[in-house]
Amino acid sequence: MTKTNSKALLRRAGAILVLLAAASGLSACKTTHPETGADPVTTGSVSSAGPSLKATARAARAWRADMRNIRTGLAYARQLEALRQTGQQLDVLKKLVSYHPKDMGLRAYYGRALLKGGRPVQAEGVFRAMIKAGQRDWKTYNALGSALAEQGRYSEARVQYNQALRVSPGNVKVVNNIAMSHILEGNPAKAETMLRRVLASPQGRGQTRIRQNLALAIGLQGRFKEARYIASQDLPPAEVEANMAYLKRMLGGSDTWKKLQKS
Image (cartoon, rainbow, N blue to C red):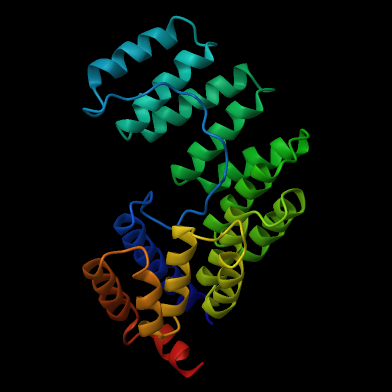
């Protein structure tokens, strides 16, 4: 598959994943973000009424009164994230990390924020530095793999994912990320094999995200009847039909679709 076709497949797969995620109540992003598997850092909460400029200003004042304070700094970063002020959010987190370089939880949070903010190259640097500093848990390897996958460096990402599996054998989130790297690289058949295997395991049984990704892998191979059946185990009929129709429209007539039909 050419580099151009691989990128086209990534965009199409990303669009379908967003639809499936939204329909099944999962967290949907603008693109296909692998799961980092990292623990959340306590940052306080944003009001259920939505982000507030007044609340953000209060959080900013509290943090600026003591810029080394992790609790107030993270609360301010959370408000900025809710307002989609990504640049300012990342600046706050970068400063916090500079004050607390040995706090691996904080560094991991910063790395995930970079990844979510569309800065995978910087996120890669954060996670590599963490590993070099001795943070060799599965979550850090998995997060580094996610940063590499976001850059389209799928084979390198799988090296890190496999490192994560050595630390945490059979980890469902990691296996799912490996499968997704194959889908985005243009090899849905390989992803299908992996996803079927993990769904049959005790850890993967009943995992909605895995099942919907399996439906995607099968649909990308043109087996819409089978994909529809699998997707229907979690989604209402109307959503399934909408997803299948969208998948057909996205793939129909493309070079990628023609190659998949012949395979």
